[in-house]
Image (cartoon, rainbow, N blue to C red; front, side, top):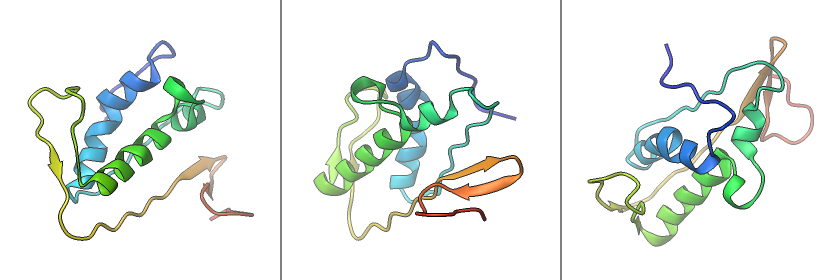
Length: 119
């Protein structure tokens, strides 16, 4: 089962807002989140994660930017992209951890580790 399917015409910003931002919001509220991209080699998974610059930023830089904005400002208004959403208020301490793994040919790689990363 999956939540959605997108094609190559989907813009990075719209994809982030509709598919990734809800997970980021839940993460900020203390709920663990996972984003999984699945598909063949050359299917656009890495581009969706990393993107380019500007409006073509991928979901990873957008999520980190949004989380750091929340932590730095203590609150954020999500620009009305979610109708009826309230401002998130941060109180207390926040512990942030992230993992990025790639599974390729039955091998798992930690993409945030320097050097050989086969797990």
